[in-house]
Length: 402
Image (cartoon, rainbow, N blue to C red):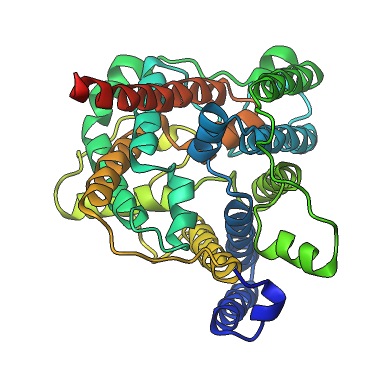
């Protein structure tokens, strides 16, 4: 692969620069809209672009990072997730201290993703974990891999829309059976800010120690001498180290919450599914309690793109740009297996994201950073779902041979 410096001026770099120019022009146009709405739209687009860039360059994918650790003994991806959670928790704590000085006052922080803790959350997270393992990525990673030309990701996203529709149809009985009376646990209201933050950072440090204990010698790439060429390659071509990746994800999450809303990638997808299902007569006349719960909210769309839609658009465009420059843009014709795995895995993730009120970003990342017990529950059961799928898949060849 040619270095970025030698490739400068080639068509991938020119297309990447044109994409960035279009993003900047769109953000500027939104910013010129009078009032706060335009500023929020502009920030949503730019923060989505920043998030997509970091996801693609840091290979920030919950499933891939988990598999790197369990299969190859490489802890870097898991450490990036843990660093992002730690930095985000510190950032959220700072924001909470200004917005809700007394966490014991009985009210939740504005818009934070603090959801109900119920058996439905556990089942939905487990289904999401199976779905992401089956399709090869979580939904946020499918979005950045869409920018890489992944042959599976378009079908996973189509499957996710179908899964959301199924989720809307099953929501009312699930809500009445388990969610309606489920507790909404915001950990700072239980422990106070200092103890909550100390417990969160301590648990994340413990998980990091466990990940490092599984690390195998030689799992990390060898370091080359630092030169201008190697520095450019490290930024533009090679996978970013876990520390800056985690720091940037945590910082983007905090700024997004401060300026617009907590990070999440399924609100626009779910809203498109809800709108289409309503138009096709596939939506229940009433979705009990759904619109009053915290998380990646879905609505019947009245505008082309919401702020979350602009965030996702920026994510895909920036990941496409980064993939072009790094040489990872590699579109290919999908195989039958990729189509089927994408559709089936996407449907499981869509149902899981609808029922859990978000995915690995909206519930796990934003939830844990906000001190929501629901985020930790999602983390446990989505991991169990992915591991259960991989364990079952590993046994299939043995059964076939027998």
